[in-house]
Structure formats: structure tokens, C-alpha cells
Length: 180
Image: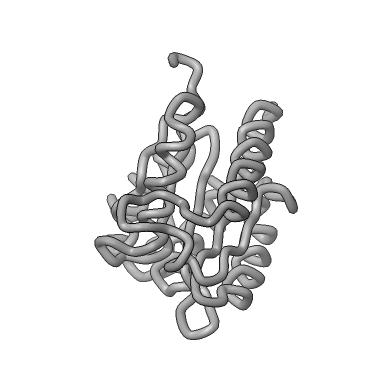
């Protein structure tokens, strides 16, 4: 297992038992032989983005976040949609990487799992494109009505969702393998 890829997983929800965190746990279980997944738990601790603080010595929480991203082989984002948009804490985290470039050329798998999720998914794709994340059609997935497709034991209960996730995982793994 020494050659497992290091993946940083970010849940766009800071709820303790959100469907997106449970989805990350389900994916971690599916990929434990391939990926060494670390769940970033400091989303709510990142200060509000402020260009005046975006210096060579940013706040400690920002520096720690950036180092986790830098030292990963890939980034998995699982997020809900809030009020037809990206959760503020997730957008804030991404804003902290614009000038420092941790997403630039980094393989990213984006899963938007919500009731609908379309608006947040589109917005996140735009943001990831601007920060030069390595993402394509095969490494993004919109899961509508996630609550009925994931049980309380963090198992995906919907066959089509499982099939689609396995395809995404394969494409994400391939993308990490092909990074220079």
C-alpha cells in the first residue's frame, strides 16, 4: 500500500454529519487500497479572505491548508448547494488559493451532492477553471437528492450512483497517475 495516492478531501458543509462528509467516508471506504485520504476539517477555521493578509506569511490556518493541498496528489471536493450557490466557507477556502496556486495543475474530483446542486456545481466549475485545477468531464459529478442515495452507515444505496462514482474514481486515479 506504499504507493497509495495522497488525497485531500474537502466537504463543503461544516455540519458534523453532513451527507457530503458521509459521502467522503463512503468514497474513502471504496478507495482505501488506492488512496490515502485525509479529510480537511479546518474549513470553518479559515479566516475570511483578505488580500491584506495574503502575504508570504498568511494566517496559520491558511498556511496549514495550503501545505495540505500542496503535499497531496489530488483533491476531492464533495459539497452541497446552499441557497442556489456554493457554501461560503468552501468559496472562502478556494479564494485563499488564488494567488498561491495550490490548485494549479492539481487533479481535482468535484462532487456536488445536494437536493438539486446544479447552480453550485456550475459555479464551482468556473472557480476551479480560474484557479487552473485539473478537472474534466469524467472527474466531476452532480448527485441530486443525495439523502435518498446514501444510508446512515455511509453506504451508497443507489446502483446508478455507485456505478457513476466508480467511474469518477477511476478517472481521478488516472488523472493523478498522469501528472508530470
